[in-house]
Amino acid sequence: MDEPIVVGVDGSASSLGAVDWGAEEAALRGAPLRLVYASLWERYEGELVAQELNRPVEEVMARDVVGTAEARARQRRPGLEVTTDVLPGEPEYALVRESRTARAVVLGSRGRSGVAEALLGSVSLTVAGHAQCPVFVLREGPGTEESGGTPRIVLAVGDEPGDAAAARFAAEEAELRGLPLEAVRAWRRPSGVFTGHDPHDGDPEEAAREAVAEALRGVPDGVATIGRTPEGHSRDALVEAARGATLLVVGAHRRHGGLGLQLGRVAHGVLHRAPCPVAVVPEQV
Image (cartoon, helix red, strand yellow):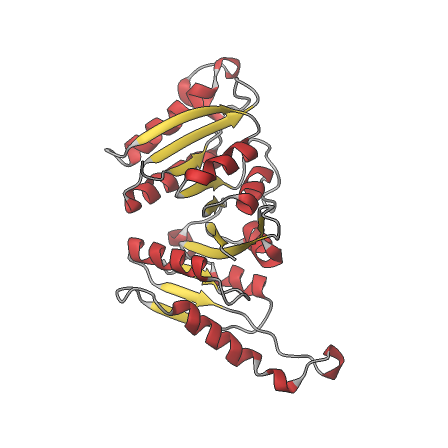
């Protein structure tokens, strides 16, 4: 059976946006789409689906949530293979289990809790940190057209020499979408002897350029590439690079002992602040 693109739905506007992205991703990859609602409660607590169904909130059930999401996906991509499921249990744990057999998981950044815009929903953060497949997290904000940016895939070039999975995934996305791939690695100038920096350690700017060149090796010939090595903090440089981008791709590393993924401060920061969708890709170690 083909690995599906899994979308976590809960009836919120954010999750319905994830349905749109998931349908497009499934169509691009020729994969089935699986829409999953997970909750300990049978009834849905929000208002959006109730309004669309013209029914009282207390009568809206989990099946209505996935049914509305399914209709949206089929309308967006007619002919797409779509399945739905309602799973008992906490959504973050259910979606991490789904990631074991998924090609990718797609989530909105905010759910029913209505957390502040600057914060990422706990479900999205937990799944992004522990999933065994790439996870798309869609933040609410202006799209590429509204921001005036150039559509492109941005790759965060990490510190580890083995950050190959994220680079391959970013190249695939660029090729599938017909977009250029921009690899970004920030660097910082040593502040002097008080930092303990040894001048024999090498030029950090040159090291960043080499890392970018390595990340772009193996990119398909038809994909245009851009390499950037801005000076400054990695998180800030990536947030700036993501303005107007279609997608920002970052890698995540497994903790010792197999206890999930270690996102690190940079990945954690861009998940909270990036102005475009973020894909978190687990790296093999």
